Length: 425
Image (tube, rainbow, N blue to C red):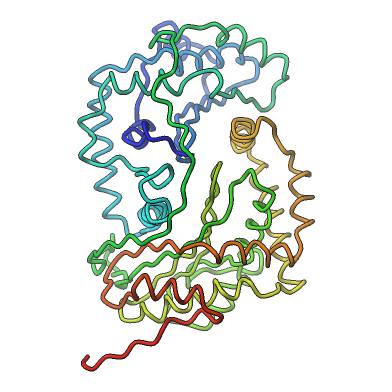
């Protein structure tokens, strides 16, 4: 769940460069240990900040010391913060000029689905808030959220006892630069799904970055409430999302690339004028959102929306045995392939322990995926279709159906939009 205090900080936080203590900087500069070291501060999800270091195993002691300095002893100089403001301004400008609208649509669909609360709050720092971010605000944030009960130290390729010993040495009992004290202003609110629509009229006729023009497209994303990643239905929803699949109209490849998913077979292969149809599943600690992103020429927006609403309704039909097995196999193979990367493994360990207090091993997750039945998929789809839709629309929206018509289509048996009649065109 995304908290309310960091709303103004998310974009700036990942750009903030922490000046380490001189002794540690010297170690980084002169020790051969750091020849292949990679250090990063990332905000990959709206609810987690990760500090990641890769180094030789023999340098574990120094690595944990470095992390302790970076997390607990940031100096937060005024010139750092001003430099970060400049970087954030550039990112916000770049965001609105990108030909790929997916980050903007994801922001909009969350704002529509969870209006005014938790994960519906802005992930990207609003431009008007940049000047409000100063050392005092950052220190308040750190004091509120950087406390032991909200932290996990994860390691891959090292012995557990060694990591525990280093944690005791460099983290246990350490006084952070913002001082010891009771956390303040901790937001513990629960995500409230509301549904709704967020529209942005935008000229998409000239977004090409090169000499070859990109067709003017209108982008629509429609979503429905799914479930928390703590619920048993999380795995069936993941299988459903994989079954829907999709991608761009110019994607290439065989079954392993998702060419036999429903959004390819039923949408992109049948409607040549659609440029994209992709399913996404976002899951959080107390709610979730399954959505479909589609794009087409502005003149065909109404037809595109109806195609997507019909696909939502058809999700409730009984999945074929081959279709279901293909989706489960693809989900398992994607899971195992991702976990071949060590950075992904320790991110997985950290996030699972932080959220649930334990980690499910890959073979346990594969067993859960294998146990999903067609009845499970039908059940979670029926649950999802009972929620109000969330709609995000970007581009030329002159042909966009009303929110009430989209809601009516998702409440019908066939997913068709109500007919409209015009006396004049």
